[in-house]
Length: 288
Image 1 (cartoon, one colour):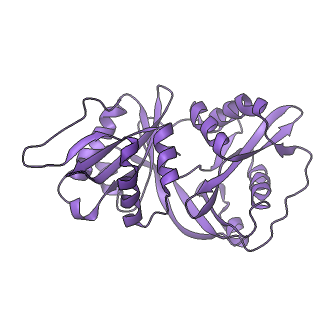
Image 2: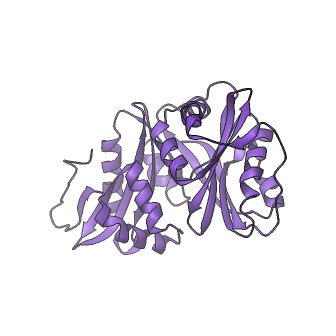
Image 3: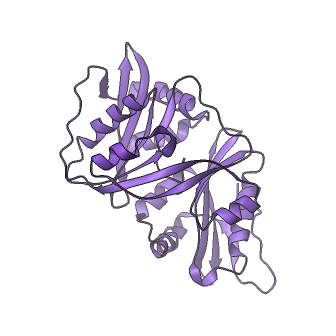
């Protein structure tokens, strides 16, 4: 996808090129500089299920930008970083222009930091929502509510989970969902053989992340989150939820403190969920 995107500029030794496995250590250093708690494994996973660009100067990674294609109409973007020493020289624009070139023809979603808002607005992105980041050591024992319709997922559930994810997001994200299910533990709401929600918990960053969580109501989303949290007592847990669903205060009551957030943005047409299905918690702020 990124072939042909090398854009050497006269007088600028930095080279824009496709993200490769050899770039992971340099990309990890970028995220550490930003204070983001990614592990090497998190970068490797992101690159395996998506595509990306890096800016290299004298063998050093000085910038990154990643994206994940969801069908022919949509993509999400994230992990967009430029090292502080290389900021202010147009490197951020070079990276983002390359990303937009690679995703041309698709509607692009991203979750922006406060610092990134001006750049994205200049590129035609508009605000559609907000994401709340909650995290902390799960020191309170969280009992799972006993319900017959909540059970661990099996391999045979994957296609139904992928279909429910598409209804909840309005985007065909089958390969991403399959990859997340492979590395995480999945629980579903099964109502008479119909999948009516799912949640994944997996290792990420400082501990575990709970997400995606998709359901047909906030109450069902809470049910799924409680099931995942009941197995993570004593672990560091992170959950990123959409503000519009009102789960923030409830997460605070469980000891998962709000530590920040992001602005949800779109360039193009916003995807439309189908029916009552909605996405409540994200896999992470980059994947959407």
